[in-house]
Image (cartoon, rainbow, N blue to C red):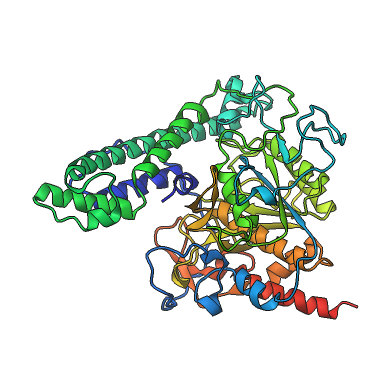
Length: 554
């Protein structure tokens, strides 16, 4: 289980997950810290439940194939999108007809990664490193994109506050609320409650992580003298315990490992939640330079998330590489607007406009938050992208929530009640079987979420030249962006609006599939009830539909 997966879940749910793993692993676990304060559950609209069908049999495996999200359900019996089959069969003999620019608004992209560096967008009108705005677009040296988050000393912002922290600070005159109008007194009372709940959840989860860390340290210490360091699953499985203590240590270690709770994952999760406790909740923390335009540093202090997203879309398609992007002929434009914390609305708005003005045809947005005090500015930028014909692809969120009831900002529904025309809201699907098609963490919504796409155990690029598996709707959105880019590059007469229509009309549906409601208490619901289309993106069917439309054009 990756840290991003842990961080993508509601904080209280992470605590429950960690406790459950610990309880399964140790018959007598150490006492855990008090459970974090819980918000009152939001009343969900009723969903009609039908009897569950038998799960569709798929190849048995403990882990997904490295390329599962690109495989085909009919040909490979894997619940991927069928992009490889589409390229191999339907597009055989064809060559990409144009390059497609996909803007990745995120926390940064590793521009030196071997699998990405040849696929990066280049602003050919700008001369790198000369300290001048050669193309007069308002951005100096923006060769690969732009970073909207800088510190007073000119560095790239890393850690940031939560939006609820900023609102709470605005109510109380704290520095973190700078630039936000003070909410009304009644709303400040509600914000204070939510801030305190968030604080209790973060601190509680951090306590649970530390408890698991202590358990893992204890069992590792018991095993290493006999098994040898470093511990691996194969070595521990093959170890014959000499006494009851070693037997329990073996069982505990294997249970933790099966839940993805290894040394590295726990260390990353601990660091992440320590940062949330230190910076995310600090009402006096304001890391930003006032009125700064930004910088050309599109990598930033931690480009792990954005690099993973970029690789899913357009990593170099070389069979010798550990991963390949979904689409050939893609150029990745890196636009840095997402910190370690909640993104600021003004940065999101400026990032969208930058991407549109500099030629992006698709904008991937794998981020979200629960508050949006500057929604009007974001909505204005979304309308601008709509007017210019640019497709926006947004991750639905990882809180197991109904987006029809609990918004994850930015949203396709604008302030005036209208819906963005060129927007795809994406939930995350699993590779396992149709009974587990919706991941346990994905947000959903019959009105707000358009479709689902692979978002669990996705292998892609990470900084330093490596690859890693990650989970989240953050991974599902770039799968959709990659399919959209595939259509645009092979069918040059299609517009982004055409591509959106084709994707929506060609989804694979599962009329009899009944899944566990994400974030629920085991409630079973039709998969079709979780999104507007009720389906899973299908690149193979989308390419077939594009070919049909092409044959009908004069």
